[in-house]
Structures are given as C-alpha cells and as structure tokens.
Length: 227
DNA sequence: TTGTGTTTTACGACCTCC
DNA sequence: GGAGGTCGTAAAACACAA
Image (cartoon, rainbow, N blue to C red; front, side, top):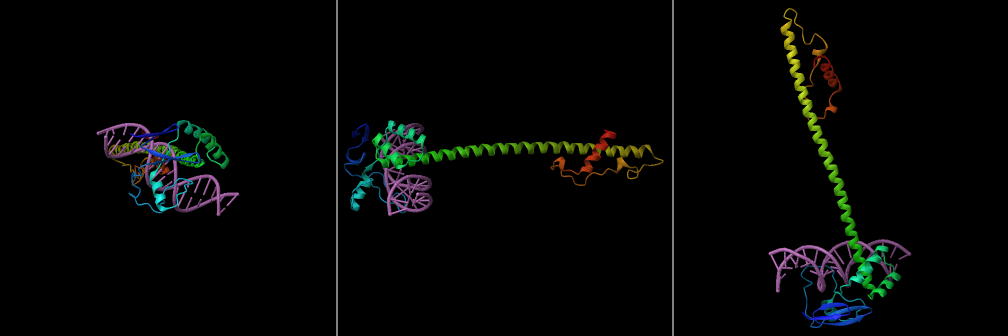
C-alpha cells in the first residue's frame, strides 16, 4: 500500500497536503471518489469542506469534499484531551486555543473532539442509568413474584383447612343425629357450633386477610372446641 | 482478502444564550 | 448576530471473523 508519512502520522495512498492553521488537510492526488455519499437519501445535507477553505466554485467544493481525509489523533493528543475533559467538559474559547496550541491541533479539531466526547459521555451515562433502572425493575418484579407465590401457598392452606372443617362439621352432625334418636338436636336449634355457616362462595385465590372477620372468629371457635 | 460491525473524526442543521 | 451547544450522520480508521 502506498503511504505518505506526515510527522508522526501515517496515511494510506498518495496524498498532497495543505497546511491550514495547525491542521493538516490531506488530499488524495488522483481525486478518485471513495464510497458514495448519495447512497442514502439525506435531506438538507451540504457538501463537506475544510474550515477556512477558500474554495469558491462548486467544483472546488466537490473536489475538496470528496478528497478530504480525516486525521487520526495520536495517543498522546487523545490522552491530553481526555485529561482536559476530565477537568471540565465544557470548552471556553481561551482554553480551546491553549489546548490546540499545546497539542498542535486546529482549535476547530479540539472543539469537535470535545463535542464528540460529550456525546460519548452522555451515551455512557444513559446506558448506566438504564442499567440501574433495569436492576431496580428486576428487583421489584422478583419481589412481586415471591409475594404472589406466598399468596397462592396460603390460599391452598386455607382451602385445605376449609375442607377439614367441612368434614368435621358433617361428621359431628351425623354423630349427633345418631346418638340422640329420642330428642334429635337440630343443628339450627342448638346454638353455637351449628350456627356456623360457610361463606357461600369463597374465592380461595383471595388472600386470607381479606376474608370476613366473623368467619375467621368462627373458625377459631371451632378450633377451640373440637380440633 | 474481504465483508461487516464498531469507533473515531468531522460536518451541517438547528437551538440557546449573551 | 456570533459563539458554542446538541443531534444526526458521513466516512475514514480499525477490528475481526470467515
């Protein structure tokens, strides 16, 4: 691959160079077009130009736009810019000029670098915020699942208790009728144990604490007497 | 080597602030 | 009105699998 070395930078192909301020603009000699702008429909998009370019005609603009190549910053330049960014994300004019002078860059390059760096920083922050919210959401969902599971378990226990009470009630009623043939004790006529009535349509998926309070008292009463 | 995805540099459009 | 910000995008540079 044909390369031209510019200072510490190595560029592919054969280029001519023009020095604008402290920014090295690299132009390709043969002027052949690289990958095509225009492959996608872009609205209100203007041709690219170098800052301060004195290109006047449309043809000149096109040539420069097509031939312009990017200059990759050195590790040292990037490190210095990162260091500067750590101190302050914004870039006032004086600081920009100072950094550009120290790094041998065009002030415009420094400004662009800070713009892009802020965008990356913002994206990173958004990703971190998203991860944090997702973690909180997952924790809440897990807690909800555990509670639902607990409710289901308790509902099953309640259902089993209901069945047990029903069986005992039926057995007791049967025994009462069998043991007192001369004076049958009416379930309705003899007070407390047989005054008990089951709620007609218990929804067992409803947590126990939502059940009628009198009903719960009746269960305790039965528990004390017969269980 | 080549196709493809990601990162970096650069720019245009638009917005806000002084 | 100008300087400097964000946003969206182009395109070069780079990484890497096939």
